[in-house]
Image (cartoon, rainbow, N blue to C red):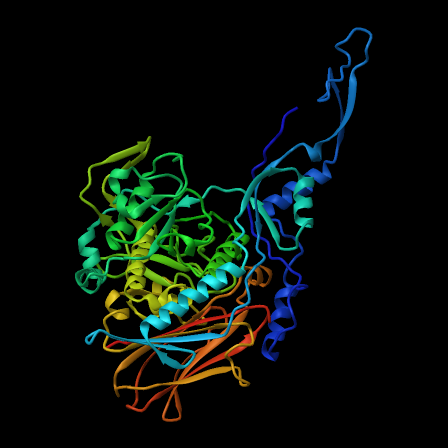
Length: 595
């Protein structure tokens, strides 16, 4: 009896139902939640799985099958005078499809209301910390942050990894019936986001210098110490290409060598030479990342899944949940399909930092870099990063058509570069540990302009243009400040749904950039194709609003303005809509002085 594995084109399907969510907390959000529910369907299968299940149910044919003996050893027609053993076989219970089963339910522990603030004056090398509004020593702050994280990790369940299986139509329906938060999609191999043979590769030392890493990190002794970075690849790196003192292959034995993995590992270890590099051969992040001897704080993903449709998918939800539950900064390559192509999953996820490729020659988006926003309307990519690295290496061949010649480019190269830069940043400023929401705000606020911003043609209505993060902008300005707020849904926002605070030491005529960023659960996002909380940012001076950002679809806001006087600023962060009382407050803030 033949078992057929079917493969067909995939599509993510929007999923309705709000049984597990409470009534909207604010009036502004009620129409939003109703709108998303009305536009969804009741399927938690992607289109290819749905097509397979429907076909099998439609062809629910029962065939007669004769066998000489069955699995119990009973014999039929092969014995003289005995009749054959006859069975009725249901084809729907025979044909199988290779699928991925994901449970997008968030299992988070209760989150205590905590706020933090950090100010750093690099010329004096002066660091100042505040916890819940009170100034504390650096040691006290870091000790309490570590204890909070340990308590949080002990009280929550481990992250649910995806599961691959061959299932019949009946088994698929049974899996879905077992939990309303399970999603099933066709199994796909991840696609490395690189194109070989590109001209114009630049010496890696030139790129490190141009991005500010050499002078502002390496030359002052900041090299990623104490920070763990995981990367996910479909193969392993020959050990001669890595510093084994800072490298661990987590999954062994190695499936095969990969030159794509060589390029990723080389860029990571060159940019953050003393960060601990953890190599994986799958797509999910490591469970309990903070439990490693050098805690895993960052993920670098130079791969995506192909998709012909623009929707937020269960693959995006899984990545968002990983960040939301574990507080790891995850970078994902935007892809190399060109400006008009839609950012593929999971790079379209709300909590990830999606990375486009920029030429180190002229600070312009590369023509292959993908920038089409997914249907929820969130602006992608958030950053554009230098690519096209050249290392002085001899060629290495991992297999037919897979040769590494010392060059590595495209969004696959840009992604480990910004991951390495961020490892240096977290090494220098431990305030940022377990705060991906603050890190994204910093990278957005601390970016320099891309010289062809019109390359990203779908940035309306927010008007957001990705920039190029430069290390000096978030580590060596004359004044910058970072904040976070976290807790249950009812935390921090006042009766006007606002968080309001002043910023002092403002210089008339000086340019400032301020960004906020927050996390959303994949469980909510995959149901409603939206962030759960819409939060806006405005800046006031002398009683006048001088800047605001009110994007309806992004999980971040950015303002760029010139101070009209030397009076203090008033920062207002307003939660315009709050579509689920289950969602946590995980909100970050970054203030950057630009000149």
